[in-house]
Image (cartoon, rainbow, N blue to C red; front, side, top):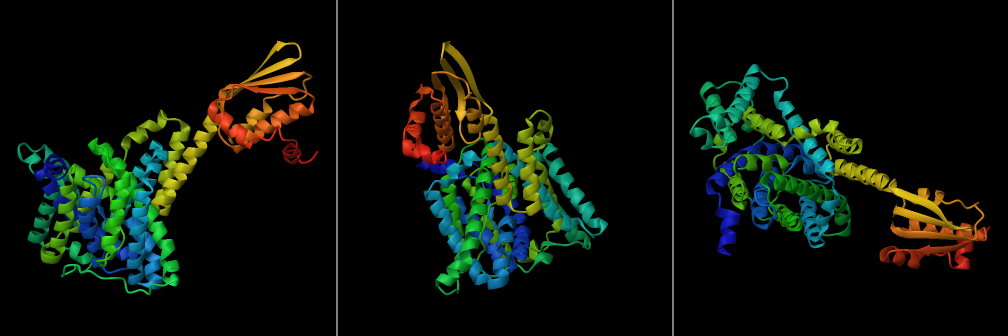
Length: 495
């Protein structure tokens, strides 16, 4: 028990503390920006980021991963807030939490095994592009000071780690924020700061219950939004967990993560926060700044609240250029540059899946749609590839006897090829179909087998099926009708 606690919380005190502070600083402008996107007060996003991070630190299934208010979730809330107001958003957040907990108990995270590596790569690249694009408003129609500060910030981020002795003492993104804030305070240059993003809260969050009528009508209003928030939140969280698994070379419990996300959203909705999920950008910042255990996530949430409530005057002075530099570092570090190099050596189908996932995600700004398109394309390509691995050979063991040997997978994508491989006009007394090296997967395959057998019998040919494996025999015995005269008539249209 003690060893588990130490490993999960206190095995990396310095790295987790510093990384948590960096993440907390980077969360502030993002939480405010996402609140503005959703059409709510900045404190709604800030309270959400605090509670999501703190609760997920204890309940989540992936140490070192950051959860907070996110842009992907904020985009789904716009219409609900505009038409019904904040209270309905809080109710939708609570229902989202319930759905996510149910998803965890139903072990829906196990469905992640159907998401191919090319889809994950496309998802990562799309997020990197979206993170970079989100910084462009801060770099458009601004003075040269902003570009100079951003460039200086990037120079510090990438150059500081190479300084002898001191380079390893502090995470470079934290140094970037501290140095650029000091420069801004000393020079008083005209650039945007965190304080220009919106008013920071001046009180701690309190418990509240959404002021909505507990009626079926309310449920019908929030249900579609809660379903969308549940799907997008879990998708982004599962994908982020997979990426952090790779970055840290450690496993995670994704079903526990589903439950943790649900508990976090329940807690968030009860203190006036908007629904959130795992954040790939902040998680990458955390890992690259040295965060590894649950402590870094807890510190990020706690420090975020303490800074915006008690140190608001100082936090509001942080120049946006410093945080833009940090987020550009995140986008560069998140993008899978190997995927560009691998385009030349990977199969065309893999490249199409990856690029389609990127294009749809960036085009719609909806991670769920992008991942759905990627998974659908990957499934179609896989079905087509497996469907082509089918061979039907013919032999003549003796006069008047034709032996067909079937090798491969027979299912909806290959059944047409299977049915076309037989010569029904050939005059033979007996046909034997050897299925010992074949496997029948679905109803379509069984129906095609029925048609083959029935067509031969209509030509007066005796048909024998041999070699069916146990699984194929089970589905054929249950659904095949070639030995049922009434069913045969119905199948062949009564002709």
